Image (cartoon, rainbow, N blue to C red; front, side, top):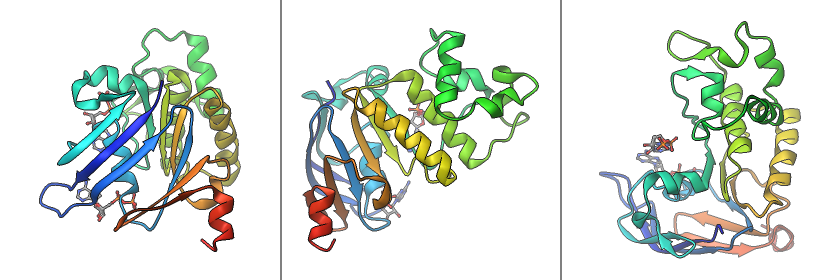
Length: 230
Ligand code: ADP
Ligand code: ADP
């Protein structure tokens, strides 16, 4: 569970030329893939095609052999945890935002997820704790707090596919390291892990995929790329 296949995928944003052209990429269940490459090459775009945030122009994206267009949105999203630089939170309490898509979660499980994402001390300092309202008139969270909240969602959801797109970029180094370690533990749990991030944090990747404007350029292990002077 968690195989991902890009088959001849071509995509461009509306009124823009193609960002991804005839991309082929096979990711095996449980594999950790690092996407690297220059800014603007299309790493984030590639990530957001997996949960089908956008419709591709040609080709197919499949999960476990099923074209994602043939899946119900809910069952697709249930299989995928995605953390992006721009975090999507809705108006509601911290508890609701962490337990998003997991309304059956117990108090204990929500706290555990918050603890793993290093949100616990922040929540304990709030007047209403987990029931503090986030939103237009509620608590304003910093970029790092928003990212930690979306990471807490992932710890609670434990999806077979995890996509971290510059997911820890707004965190301080210490928190970043701790969360990285916790996510690596999660990924040993047969999770397919896709990380688009700077090179330093992807030592444990099974494969490095270099995305450039020309397409997917090179694939290999970190050590091989270093040896080749990359
Ligand atoms: P990377 O993640 O490698 O930095 P992106 O996938 O963010 O690259 O961007 C690839 C290209 O698509 C860039 O030229 C960027 O300007 C463009 N792009 C990204 N998001 C959008 C969007 N929502 N609408 C239009 N163009 C976009
Ligand atoms: P839902 O399960 O309700 O779709 P999501 O968090 O996956 O919740 O996304 C909420 C909505 O926002 C979705 O309809 C999705 O299409 C859109 N969305 C979320 N993240 C992005 C993104 N990075 N780019 C474009 N659309 C997004």
